[in-house]
Image 1 (cartoon, rainbow, N blue to C red):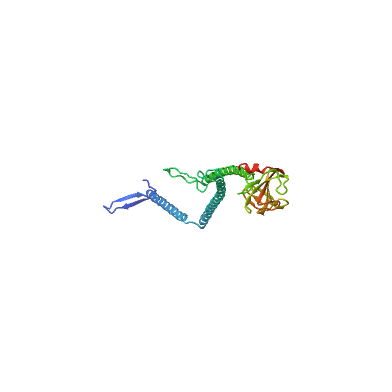
Image 2: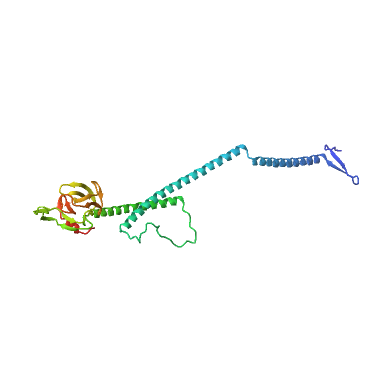
Length: 317
């Protein structure tokens, strides 16, 4: 009869008193399985709990993390301030350039107005007091605002156009001024506003002794105290008394041309004065070697006397 080494456990049921025998090795195996399952469940729960705790801990910012965020915000704010300052400087620069352009446009308008007043441009065609007329239908799609680089490019192009116009207008103004100066210096017309020719240029009988003598100018008689005017623009080179001439005004008109106005009652200019064509330079009188109120008018070219009647009779420019 063989004896078994394994121990058996006898289980007695409540019903019918029946018993069941389990080998001990099967029970141990089942217990080990249950323990292993419990360990797995416990490990899973523990891992889930640790992960939850770590998640809760990670959601709470640390002082170091807060400090890092503050540094980033400070850096971003510095970038914003830098961009704002750069934009302000660009706007200031554009504003300054626009101000300079406005000043240059005002000068161009003034030059244009001078051309209109000079008669070179029709005043009804060019009105420099009003902005240029422009217009057109409105687009159905709203236009886009210009960017700063686009505005800078447009201003550069406008400055270049203004510079070209300034150069052209300066040249035109110089030519006009030169022409006007030449016209003003052009000796022509009578040195009086009212009167008559009382003695011609050339040989005549001297009014004091009756002898045949040379007369270097013409005499224009009139009312005492009436105006004596310059026949052309120039510079006064003499404004005082001179022997035989009485009170004399002498004007240099350039290009070797000089005019003289003698026997004046009073002189209205002084040496060095710049006189304009038609300006009153003296009042008619009878000073010096004279028989009555008149102006002795002479024209000299390069120091030689010319017939004043040629200049009196020729038309002004």
